[in-house]
Image 1: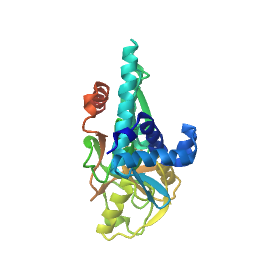
Image 2: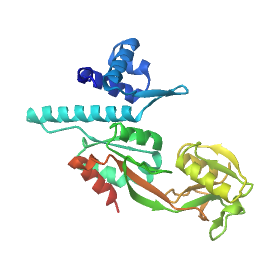
Image 3: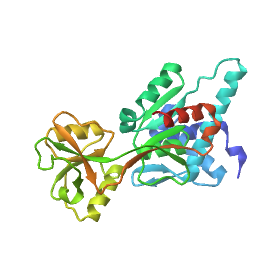
Image 4: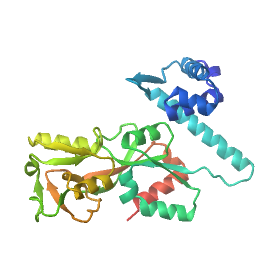
Length: 290
């Protein structure tokens, strides 16, 4: 390993590249040419002796080593900024970054975020993203914490359960399944369902459960976010299986679904993250939200 090639300048450039995973946009932010950025990233990878990214189809994806480098570079920059701030006798201003999806912000984290921002408005910065982007942000150090429903718990990160909800079926009033009591999965045979896009954890788990029961169904529409999914049900587009924290809109009833496991939101962070008292404090507040 050539330590001379692992310069602060190279690490700073790699962080920008890791944020965009696009040489054109990253070079524009750094105000250098795209070939120059290629050279910087290439020399950094050569100095470390490991590939830092690879191409999957048209997308660039960080390798595990690339995620580690980005995480180290961000932590180094944060420590340096904090040292310089304290050295100058000022109060550190760098916020804790929380990454989560729409559902977590709408139905889970609102009171905690309001309280934190009331106490110290500069303490928290929020990132809205899906679960894959959340995991990438935590792995690369772009976010200190993440909250999401996960189909598979990450082995390299600490994941703590925050809240668990039953799965509910949204049905328009007057529908044949608009009746008291739980709905069994076989009763969904032949229905049109409003579902999240493919590869979302909720969609994956729902498809697996329906397949296991031999239930044939069709996609009425793919929708991003619980409010839009609920609105499509209210319009009569189809039925939807949703997390139990989602309120039913007017004209729609929520029925428990038998045979589906409850859904758990997890708080995710690096194993070493709680060494930062700011992060540890936010974790404590999220877990004590009730």
